[in-house]
Image (cartoon, rainbow, N blue to C red; front, side, top):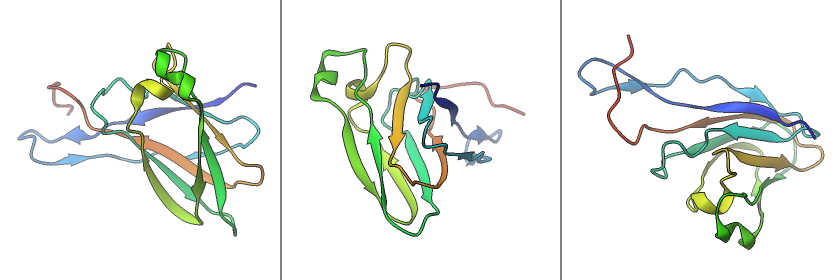
Length: 130
């Protein structure tokens, strides 16, 4: 299966670093492809949120796939319910789901319709973008 791919979206800080803003780009989900979030764990600070908008008329399900980078991936996949509307999912056990390239794979239940995006804050100091 060739997965659709999204990037984690990070805030752009203003010059005093008192305000940060993220211009959100949503990706429509193609259930047959699933989603890979590239560089999902480069922030390494548990700040990543996966935002899913279930635009269907019934609840659905999301499977967060076990990774390949660390031994605790043997704990396996986790499937969670997606109610109708918007869900914000925070992944706490990064190493369980991280693949060797730093990405994470997600699968959606048959019949799911909606969009996805991922956001996070930076774990360290970085230059202010203008």
